[in-house]
Image (cartoon, rainbow, N blue to C red; front, side, top):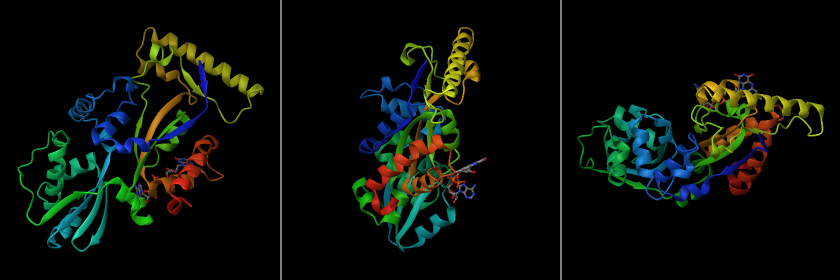
Amino acid sequence: MHIIEPHFIILDELDQQSLPVRIEFCGRICYKSENRINSDSALPFVRNMIEHGHNSVLEMAVVTLVVSCSTSNPVQDLFFCQPKFLHIDQLTPRQLLITGSIRAFREMLLFYPDNNITQAIALFLARRHPYFFSGIESDTQLPPPGISVEKMPLAEVEQLAPRQCARHRHLAVKFIVSRAVTHELVRHRPCAFLQESQRYCRYSADKFGNEVTFIKPIFFDEQSKEYTIWKQSMAEMEQQYLRLLQTSTPQAARTVLPNSCKTEIITYANLMQWQHILMLRTAKNAEPSMREVMIPLQQELRSRYPAIFS
Ligand SMILES: Cc1cc2nc3c(=O)[nH]c(=O)nc-3n(C[C@H](O)[C@H](O)[C@H](O)COP(=O)(O)OP(=O)(O)OC[C@H]3O[C@@H](n4cnc5c(N)ncnc54)[C@H](O)[C@@H]3O)c2cc1C
């Protein structure tokens, strides 16, 4: 049995990587198979996710596009479609700033294949990453006339006015916390999440140190009798879990694992959502284990984006 303190890592370095590299890095948290990442592994991983319909992995990388139209008609047509899970700002009557994940752009093509802006975006992305649209038939080979699409580099997104930056700048944070905390975190619906899976991870394996890892609870002092009770309970649960694993699968054995189990979760959201999460989860009435990670995260984001988080 291993006991650790909860912590988080802001994955902003990942934003400098290509879209498939970002997707693979996040996706592998589910299987804890990060050791299989190499210079050639991203594309097969992404293809495999698409083939198996593991679409939430494709939510883990967004791209910001400037779409310019020669008339305002395509802009109106797009708003009538009401495409989901995109952040759209109208820069001028004929120009849009659109941020979306690969999943959102895939589904935009799937549901609105005849829309001109949809076609222009899909062609723009497919020229760079054809595998993103595998399984979706599109007859369009040429961009619709009068519509151009350009990528907005991240450095420019960061220079947008605070309100726009908050909508378009997305940030991934990896939390290493208890299952109790992640149960609460996943209630924040506009975010994308990927989490270490107790169905796939077999904690008796060498790569997990042949043991279960628990998060030290904020509630009990290490010298207290409550802490001793908690520690004993964790040791007993671990024993039962390891016994069950001798004859059962991880998904069956995990039924005895408690809330204190350590888990890893990547939460990906725009800065506006982070504002909302931090407001709720740092408040005095929020769960103390949640505040334990959210208060330092808020301090860190305040220093990085003072105009948004102050
Ligand atoms: C102190 C505290 C105590 C809590 N106690 C409980 C409890 O006892 N039981 C319990 O079940 N939960 C509890 N929760 C969870 C809480 O009910 C929310 O589910 C959670 O905080 C997510 O916040 P949210 O709903 O504001 O927004 P999010 O899901 O983070 O959504 C963000 C924004 O998206 C929009 N949005 C998302 N989905 C919809 C939708 N379907 N319709 C309209 N707008 C939408 C809204 O504009 C919303 O502001 C608690 C949370 C806190 C902070």
